[in-house]
Image (cartoon, rainbow, N blue to C red; front, top):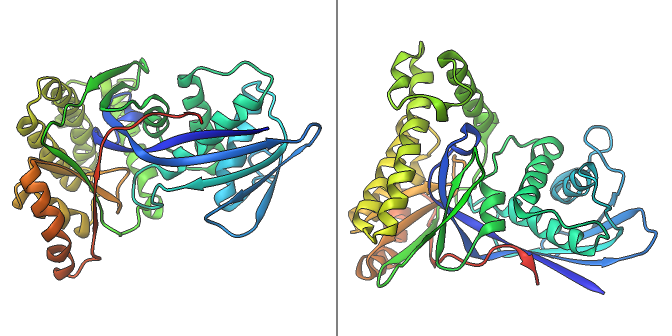
Length: 361
């Protein structure tokens, strides 16, 4: 019997690099995602994994672990889930699994977390063990990515994929792990994802460097995480770079809460202004944007958008734009040419809406 796990990618509307600082974020799940088709083989001690997007199959021993036995390449995300599930006490069945995904890789839309969550949905549905709750699954997926794959990500991507709901944004509190649904009534307005076609990379360990800077700032301020510092506490830090990194996180947390309130009352102009302020903070204080991304965001706003900001970990990827229907038509028709005319890759503009979260299909 084939079990199909599905999990979507995500767009983070606002709240970048706040998750590992115990802060807040406001993502949505997308209408595109990854599917993991699993056929169990009783007694098998290997999970044979193939991908519709990659050549060849990879044999993942159920005993795989970080270190000498780490599975390399794209299959590491699957192997990491196998290892993290077993570490959690879940009996992982062997057999065959096929992965497919329509989340653009490298666009900052969480293609890796979509694969992880789809794999977890399929394997837990086929396991005789009790199925963990969604927050526990998110932690298992994060552990797979942190400790097996070696990417120091927070919980934003996995929580977004697992808790997503149609026409709903998710106000995530990364200390309590509470998920507060926020209705997203777009009406005649449009949400656009603009793929810069500049691949999203955690360039040269820059993501890790930002995380370490935040941890150092919290330690200097004597708080468990930047979430616990006063809004202006960044002024007391000793180094300019550390002050700017902390200022981004502290002001971003405030922006997320204000944005959720604006969304609840349907004030898209106020929401857009907060998106613009978030992008400026990522550009100037956290320094995670690139010229192509900045050009897209600026062009969208100049074309009449309420707001535009980079989404994802940075150094490439996608810009999320909120605009009226008229401005969205103008942006879709004109922005790619304007940006490519400035010497950057021609971006792709796609309308998006909040979609359903991970499930067994």
